[in-house]
Figure (cartoon, rainbow, N blue to C red):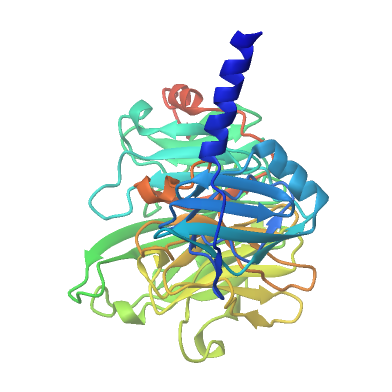
Length: 479
């Protein structure tokens, strides 16, 4: 019996020593210096714990809706089971932080977590890539469960001879239909159909390049895609580093059932650059971005893209004969007016896009911001609560149209990270929050950018080894 008591007593003493107790506490009329910034954010009931750092703290005590966490050092880590119960039982959680810094305890101004029952799709896919221009290899595509910290590799550079790999895109947030690209010699589009992978060569001799940016039609039978000749160039101005632009680009439709390309002269005008196509949720239109072709690179600042749409018939696979300008040009007024990456919410209510001063590659433009168009009224929301002084772009919607995820460089202007934004039923955007990580120090030490995040409703039914095997196949040609 004594043998059992002594180890138990020792354990209790260790726990007591590891649980700091605030004393002589001062109050501060300021929010705590936490990272990531999770103060006063709206979160879904199914999100993983918002573990965070209190910068510079020697010890921390946190009280959140009756859940208490105490720690030595600056890390605050919640128990996953207790966290899940906390979110299920509360729609508003007050968070109080008391920290020991410089030998003194300070109780900071409390903040809130607003919990909504509108769930995020459980899985997120993204490309991990070096954030600078020297390296495009060592790329991985991954999927991560946002409800916990499970992560799996979809493609890996070590299994693909270090080829460049483009981003993974699902059809309507579906896991059973999606596609990604492996570039280089012997590469191709890898189409996932219920875990069965096809290797496609979506290119014909009259195209400027293979497919670059693409999106599925609602039925999943078609993709609309752009072919782009992409040119990287360096700026002479010290405040700018790299510019990436298209010297050629056109838009097409591919029939994935019959392996054929559908063309229209409206979308392949040699005097116009067309890119970033996407289908409307009802399949009746293709939205894309278009710019008159200026002299490049001399007139790069005149590369101004507008948002355009053209009718499409999913029953016949026929592209319409007229186009409409939706946003840009004279309708924009002063300020940022080059449009990129249009994405329409699944319910058809809102269109999200990126604006920047000029050009087609917003990840290198610090001024790049998100805008949201109300499809019923035509009103434009500048999303001031969402945007930052750094690049905010590469966005996609959740299947319930209540959330979108985007890549933001707001921390340091270099590394992109996934942020989630809630859109309530009145169409108001709420302050976004960063993808939580199991270790609060993760983003301080992780030296990759999260690129082109996409939400998915289920876990994808393939992995990096499946893609490796698919790449050994002969690519199916298109005509």
